[in-house]
Image (tube, helix red, strand yellow):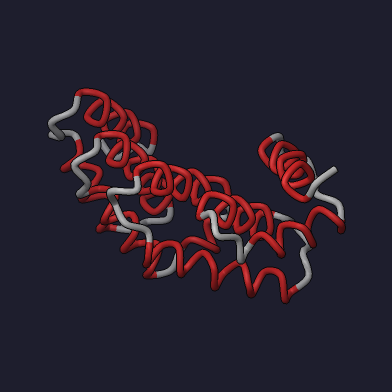
Length: 163
């Protein structure tokens, strides 16, 4: 199998919540420097979600995640979407940093309703941990121009007991 085929198999295991083998984790580490932002995002998620990756892998994944959050152009809809999904799949402790908050803010202010919808989900994670700014943004999202974003914001607020 080619590296790309092995990556796809490891991605499937990651998305299905299966633990990755040492070989798969090493492959993910190599993909942190991929040309494709989607592959870098998936590799970050797989390494940061893994319960016991080697410390160097996690350190590199954190650096890559920060770079993706800072450098991804909001007009790159697919990468913004992939990165937001990655952020939803990794432990909150890995996302509770300023560059991620800035990325979520860019999602929230995007012209694309799918970005704003993903921002609502991510803001829910921050709100769950008592973030007052996230709660405020969630409340403002209940008045979004898109009905789906409004409904998701309202549901998140209700689920968190903030209504």
